[in-house]
Length: 200
Image (cartoon, rainbow, N blue to C red; front, top):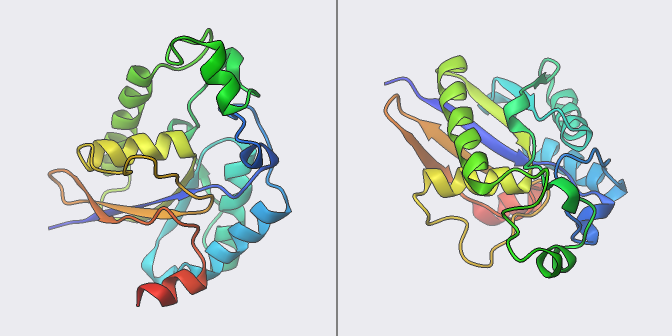
């Protein structure tokens, strides 16, 4: 059986993450904490367990991917457009509570990507990666909303748990067994060496 392994790494922190602002496809940058988180994650990743790094086209993901690739001597990350964050349309830049208060249906924001469209894209991403990276072990740097949907699809709605947030620079691992995707490891906390020690 040929396994395809997918590590979903969320980008490091941005200033908008601190304020719980909707970032979507707005091209925000990592802050100092985010850069440190990316470096910690890179140090915690064992390069012997992975073959390559791919990334969302947004700069906060690309910079995270570059740090991981450079630290672990991977080739330059390949941009995969399907890894981009969900677009929140005209709501981008609003704080979460402002978004909820302003729109009676947050799934119907002008210019935004609906949950149905996001789920379709997530399924297309899973299918594309299973085909294009068959038998490879791939770290994919992406974003909170998309990673949540990917986890929900593969876990059949069990993960993430109700009220559970995905930390910046957290790593969740999926595996494709040539039939379907499965969750290999679920960890919503930020990846760092101390977390790995805790899991041993």
